[in-house]
Amino acid sequence: MSRSVFVSYSSKQGSWVLDRLVPCLRAASVEVFVDKERFEAGKAVMESMDEWQEKADLSLLVLTPDYLSSKYCMHELEQAVKKDRSFKKGLVIPIVREDCRLPDKVRRAEPLHVDLIDEDNQDQWRKLFKACEADLGDLGASARDWLLARDNTRTSLKRNESVNLVVRGRTGWRPLVEHLRDDCVTDLGLVNLDNPATLSRRGLVQAMLTATGTPGIVVPDEPNDLAELGRIIESRKSTRIALTHFDLVANRSQYNAIDLFSAIRYWLMDSRKLVLLVQSRSPFNTLVPSDHPLSPIVLKIVELKGKI
Image 1 (cartoon, rainbow, N blue to C red):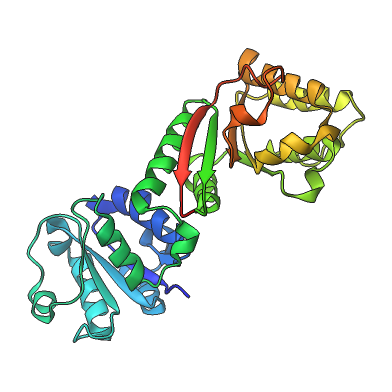
Image 2 (image 1 turned 90 degrees about the vertical axis):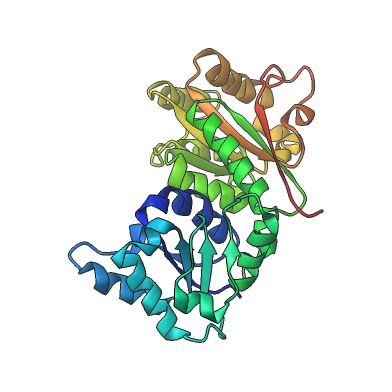
């Protein structure tokens, strides 16, 4: 089971910590405490830092020259060292993010430390994950590949470009989608085709309406169900929906595919009011025949390769 970690860092490293380090740790099922999320308004800064640092199993110290010159960061370092002065328990993990001289009390102990000056050094990422007892089966891919897939998907969605996230092998696509929804593309609705509620066309349309933020609408009978869904989509500037387990579409004739997928094609290509993130095991263009209503659609392919 992974261990909880408190991340101590300088605000100058905030972007890297929150956008690179924390998402990878959470994708590997590590519970992460960071000041941006945990510190409560009205509480003294030091009190809040001490409270959350004490709750964590480990302290990760993201070391840079700015970190070493910050009184708040050095306070966190002191609190971490108090729990493991000899650095023998593995409770303090220094992460060298920029070239800097380690504090004497850290350097003298010669603890395990992680060198991420080069973020692409996968051996160092593995060292960090091992220290946190992370579940690498949940992450699946390397940190570099996971972040690259996240970055490419996020960029396209923010440009209102639809994406086919093609997953190879066992890898952490679920935490990637959750991270996008929680932190990056917060208006991204989710429709899980693995959910039995989506087996019927009515159920799928209801799930798409719910994904638009309008769950209370009663779905009319066909073909007015698509007109109602279209009314909601056309009334909005843009609607972003993630369709996961899209491979299942190939076996769902009950969707009355011609009407449904012609409507989806129209919202994607003509009115351009709908943006999709399609997660599948096989590429999108291999899941629909050449004469399928969706066949003219070209989605940006983003691959996430994991362990086979």
